[in-house]
Amino acid sequence: MKPTIAAFRPDDDRLAEAVSLLESLGTEPVADPMLAVSPTGAVPRADADYTVFTSKTGVELAADADWTPGGSVCAIGESTAGVLRDRGYTVDVVPEEFSSAGLVAALRGSVDGARVEVARSDHGSDVLLDGLNAAGAYVHETVLYELTRPPESGEAVERAAAGTLDGALFTSSLTVANFLDAAAERGIREDAIAGLGDAVVGCIGTPTREAAEAAGVPVDVVPETADFAALARAVVDAVDETDTGA
Image (tube, rainbow, N blue to C red):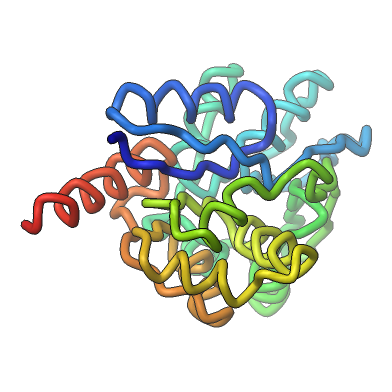
């Protein structure tokens, strides 16, 4: 029997790609979109010395609006940087640590007195804004899109509570929160957490891992690269090792 692995990507090409990848790895994907993207119609400012993108979605929305940068372009993570390059932008800064704290550390010595535009979702971490402000930057945030939980989400929650989920791929702190909210709505929050304890739980980076562990969800896998494909392969490998007793 193929292992069941839950993916919580938005219900667009990202979820389709996740399903295709998980199928190619010999698993039964549980496609459970825990995020829905609603563009606000806003566009990043073009007069900033630095513009920060935190996701591929933000890049695509800016590029579709024909945004042109006025200064250096920064990306948190190689996936975001890759989409920027694909859309014709030059990427000037990618921090070694793919996180808000990592970008703050990378920019700390160069943004004193500079205008920094942060283009992201409505659920961005305060770590980035607070850190850049503390470094002396004049920070402006543009919310390019809002993230909500689709009402139809929750299949993976029910599988976890029933003990029939072998792995879960959490790609942000919000996917963790939405998973647990969906479980609470069904009255099975504790059962779902217990079910995750018997599965292999993967988180795409340190902030996501910290959010999961703070909520009582044990985390088994955090890939070295903050990338969905790396996360999926690492979790599938861990599930296979568990099944074979390795």
